[in-house]
Image 1: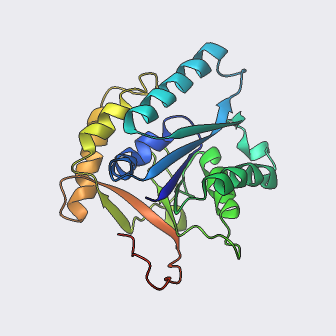
Image 2 (image 1 turned 180 degrees about the vertical axis):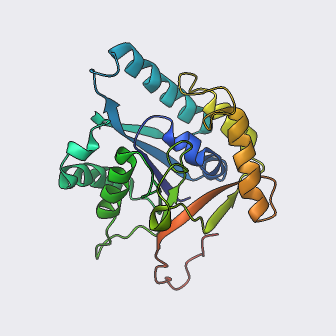
Image 3 (image 1 turned 90 degrees about the horizontal axis):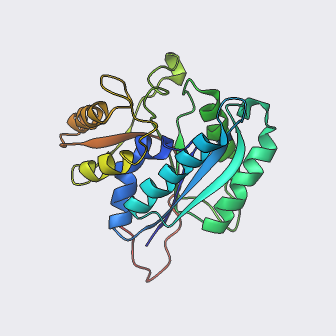
Length: 231
């Protein structure tokens, strides 16, 4: 069993970005936990809207088999006003509690500054230490945030693909719990577009459906004599 931590700036980012991969982890017996970093500011979202999205987040993640959802309550969309060390320290506390083997984060080039801030903070929070190092950090793409990013170094150029052919329908069912966040096609946050994107990413690796990631860092720890190798 591996510990998996998915960090999402806002409720729904985790499911839109890597819900199929999360489903694979859950089905293989891994322990998956999710961190939702922000809470909408009252000037933009009334309490009833916040309550609804959080209910949707709990329902969607429970449906997949996620063991715990952490809510950090930093202000959305104002992470650019939060000191980086404060954000990183809060995420670091969850990392040390979960001690994940793998961490999934939003892409650093996403157009939403909350996503950029979370990516940087996670990179600080998972810095290797002598007693503990996250083995793999991957960044995911979020519909309507990643594809609108600037070109060049900020563009999403995936180099890791996870086959979710057997989990695509389960991802779509989980996403469906986020009723308040879904949009009709051809919006990128529609079920139809999510399915099409999974087919497109799958075609790159000759799979029926896939999710794409950018490898941020990978660490292969020294093997212990006699230890069983993880798949």
